[in-house]
Length: 286
Image (tube, rainbow, N blue to C red; front, top):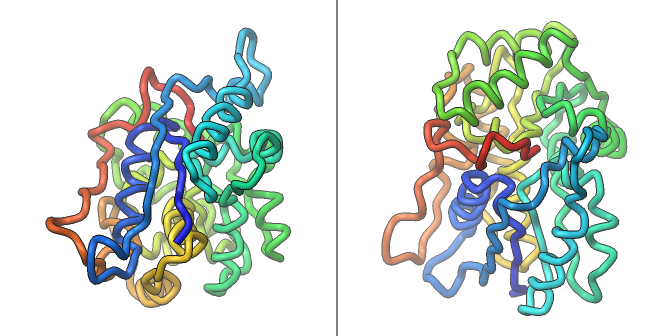
């Protein structure tokens, strides 16, 4: 198996969640069946959205991530990942310093996954920065899917969920999440992409307002396992099965919950919750 390197801290709770799901989605009978993973937790990496939107004084995140990528490669990691969707707007530049190692592209992997499980028209929930950079619009188009971006007032609700609730450590009112999802369904969406790792911490179930919910962090974890050459659980099957069920309330867990994993001396790490936050100083992560 190849060694996995993670540029983490973008944000910290999302990084912990990614590692937890990597363990969860590995089909293992013993410890030795799991991946060799090195995590660099770098929450000091500058705000990605601020830089992409050209906010005054915003520092580049590219060079610090290039440095982290080189460090991981020097430590023997040949597969790299980062739980930050917005950073993928500059993924080619970040990866340009590598000699051998390669990145797992989270938005592109998530878009391809959405196509494989039958989605046709996908609404994207992400930060203003990710949407302005066209990260998911490009990925979904390459996968042959239609993209729906929330209307201005709905996007304001999405940003409120991310900043006023999740980042602030407050529980998100279920009706707020339902309202956002309902707005996308009214636009004809059969899939809803969680394109911000803050939203991955909400524990949304398989369906929301009748649409299938695709968590990009789920797909990143699963793809890390397969890309490194380990045996993964059937995440696509889990999505199809739960997607065929009823709507589930927030905090229902990740789509892979209930999938078997083994080979540990104890339980896999618990998933993070909104009350734990996911980044420092309310910095934009996705």
